[in-house]
Image (cartoon, rainbow, N blue to C red; front, side, top):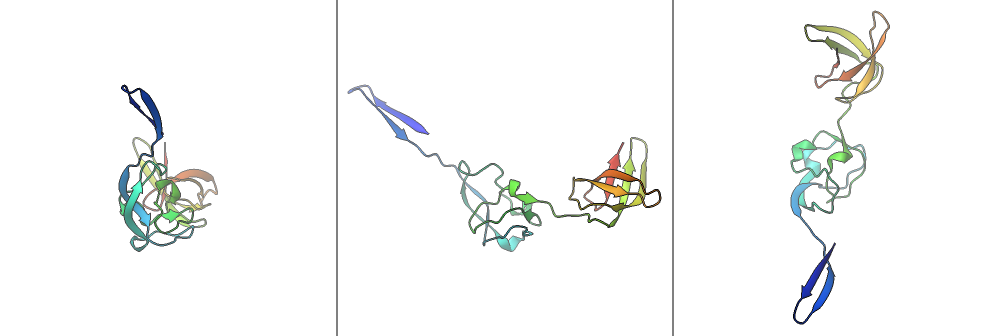
Length: 149
C-alpha cells in the first residue's frame, strides 16, 4: 500500500510505501512436517503470525488441527492453515459399515459394504450385500454412512 503524506505550508506531497501488519497468535508447525502427517499436539506450537500476510484460514486453537492430516509439507515456524488440512479417512473400501436410512417419520439401519474410502462428510458408494445394489451415502461422524430422504 502507499500512504500520502502532505503539508500545506510549505506545500509538498510525498507518497510513502507502507506495509501493514496485524500480528495474532496462531498455530504453527513446531518441526518440519512432511505431507500426509497426522498432526499431534507435539508437532504444533503457538507463534506470532502476520494475519494480513497469510492466506485465510489461520488456526488459533491447536485442537482444531490435532488428528487432521496435512496435505502438504510445512517448515518449522510456518502457520497451519485450515485449507491445508484433511480429516482422516474414517471408512475404508471393503469395510462393513452401518447404513442408516432416515426420513421424517422413520429410521432404518442395515449393514452395507463401503466401495471406496471416505472422510466424514464425503459421499461414497456403498453396496447392500443382500441385494447387491449400489447406493451413494454420506460418511457420518460415528463411522457409518447415512442417506436422508
